[in-house]
Image 1 (cartoon, rainbow, N blue to C red):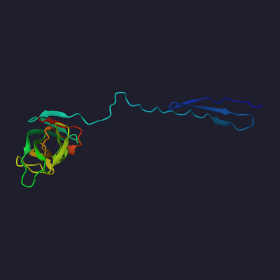
Image 2 (cartoon, rainbow, N blue to C red; image 1 turned 180 degrees about the horizontal axis):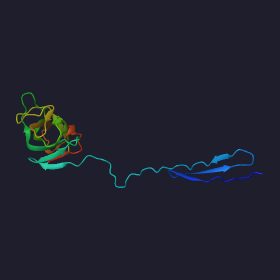
Image 3 (cartoon, rainbow, N blue to C red; image 1 turned 135 degrees about the horizontal axis):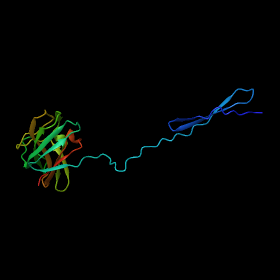
Length: 198
């Protein structure tokens, strides 16, 4: 006859799992230890918060001609105060910068002042766009004009320092410039400044 001896039924709570250990023994034989299979461990997945919004580019800050906007770069210490001082439409090309037939040059004069804690080292023309009254967008060109000195290539502006220059666009003669947009980090920064030109 087999005699069952309950040696112990300890419950071990390890991370929400319970294990039951039973010791069965019969007379004259070695004890047999069996272990219950642990319950399947279910780890809840993290659900996104209901009000979470995917990251997107920040809405443009706006100003008019003569207005200054302080724009942030990807580096937390990079901040530039950008002033659009004037628009020259049409701009007068130098002898080597004639636009194509049916086109004209438009020059946007900016003052870039480093108001942050990091050195600005970028090409201002890369982060600039001109938008006409029909919503067409134009990128800068490397033409030189008589109404101002182009930034030309990379500008390095230390903290507290500033630079003034023009960014030139070639557009159709019929185009009416309506907006100018500018962003740091060659246009990849989250914040974009926008100036109304009319």
